[in-house]
Image (cartoon, helix red, strand yellow):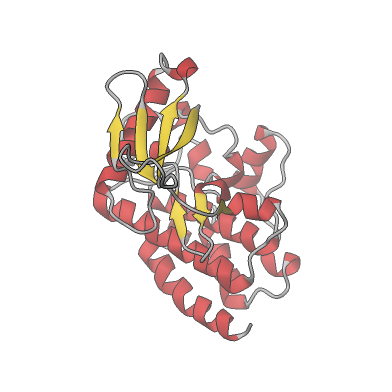
Length: 262
């Protein structure tokens, strides 16, 4: 849907590209939903100031070509790391998850929105381990009157909370925390907790099937970490941590303890 270009200031012709320009592909210029997603990303990215949320420096979204300008981020996404076989060590996985939770907390506190698409592919991990939440186009207020069922979710079903695929439950920040739990499970185990090969199978698993305990898949996982992941992935949102801040406060000492075990 978008294409990303490296860019540099015109007066710095010989300098390496230090900015990323995210441009909507021409075939999407007449798609209102695609334009709205890019506008939403710009709106959130210009208001939320956190080292763990992709910033938007400027944008041109009133007419084609639709684009946003962001700082260039070095590194690979967590999905790319996993695909290459570079599964992070346990304390690093916890560190990545904590930084993601800090980004979610900043979005929630600043603009009252959930991210809506937390997954390894939307976590940029720098060479030093610094992690940034990407793709703010799915950010949404729980009070938004638009139907969540109408939003594109193909490719992210593996990480969606049960309430995201049913109209019978309320959606709020705890939906992001479920997705964070699925992501942390995958970072530690090297595979996601649900393996359905069709959308219907994945929806059933999220709604009704308890995933295999992570200690069965990754026996080195400490019990407190397994307990946190289990609570993050609770089917009932009321059984999950209530806010990203709670998750940050729980992850921080676990992270320190696990670094000490290395």
